[in-house]
Length: 62
View 1: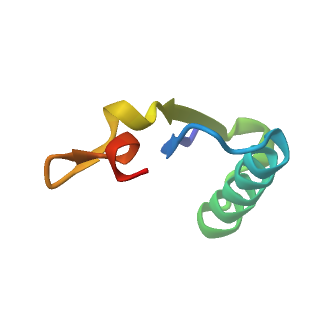
View 2 (view 1 turned 30 degrees about the vertical axis):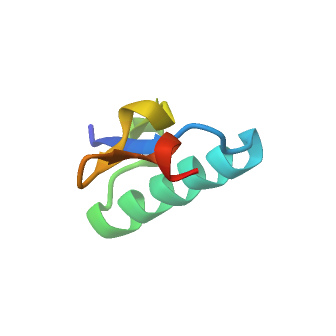
């Protein structure tokens, strides 16, 4: 049973997240031959103040 963990910044629409889940499921099914009903996709939404590059958070970037 494949499990995909995807970390994304908060703020995306439900439609965008649904598309990501569907396309990830399809890609895993296609590449591994796994049945879609056995594929789990976990979206982890990270607050902008908790995501940083080079010591600067996404919240600070604006």
